[in-house]
Image (cartoon, rainbow, N blue to C red; front, side, top):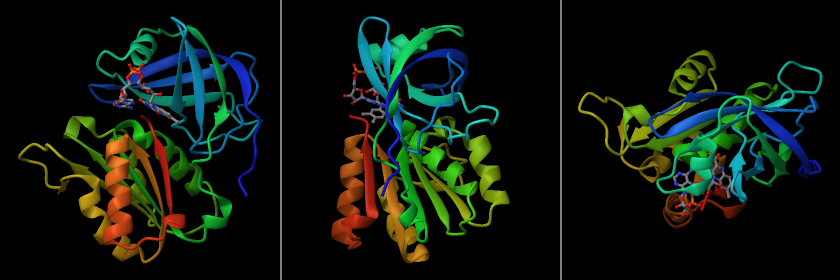
Length: 244
Ligand SMILES: Cc1cc2nc3c(=O)[nH]c(=O)nc-3n(C[C@H](O)[C@H](O)[C@H](O)COP(=O)(O)OP(=O)(O)OC[C@H]3O[C@@H](n4cnc5c(N)ncnc54)[C@H](O)[C@@H]3O)c2cc1C
């Protein structure tokens, strides 16, 4: 069972932003009323943006328990979509700006009953956001199952949160960070190609795993097809969140 958290409206204030890549920006918001924002790692918020726009964004940070520093904050990682009205409105915000929100929403979470099996997180682009939240949340728990993050993007410059994920994998024996680039520079010594090309090997190593996939539909459809038709993964082990 997934713990039900009632969705509520709250006003958020933008505290800070930071470029994560040439096209992705990190936004840190705090709840203006100071209340803790209760959510499950993997869930998303609806934002009401200037111009009457409504857009949904996964929370990229792990929940902080009430009473602890940062419990009233969430972090988002947002792609600037070409000719995209919603992302343009967000990228125009400066610290101090306020937006209305509704949340948390969504069932794309790592359920407690699945935590005795390894997790394979598969993302492209800002599909990484909810998976980062799930991974950080998992590491705050006593479980010991392997946690593998397969992240696909075009170039080295698009490796979101690289400075955090590489050290995380070095310091936690159960974490593996597997970036793969579709248009790497010549000096890139890591994996190449789309995420689906690496599923067979990673799943063979894990034996059994719940697979969490997030990003645009084109990638999700490819990954689902590979898992089902080529690797025979039971659909009950596959969990997806689509951005389009
Ligand atoms: C549950 C959920 C969670 C989401 N979480 C995030 C998130 O954490 N970060 C984020 O950047 N977006 C996220 N999105 C997408 C977001 O809601 C908007 O669709 C996106 O910002 C585009 O809005 P727009 O008005 O700028 O573009 P629009 O004019 O609405 O254009 C939409 C088009 O942009 C493309 N698109 C949508 N999202 C992306 C993306 N991330 N990267 C590249 N192209 C995209 C799609 O092809 C879509 O057809 C999420 C969507 C859903 C449904």
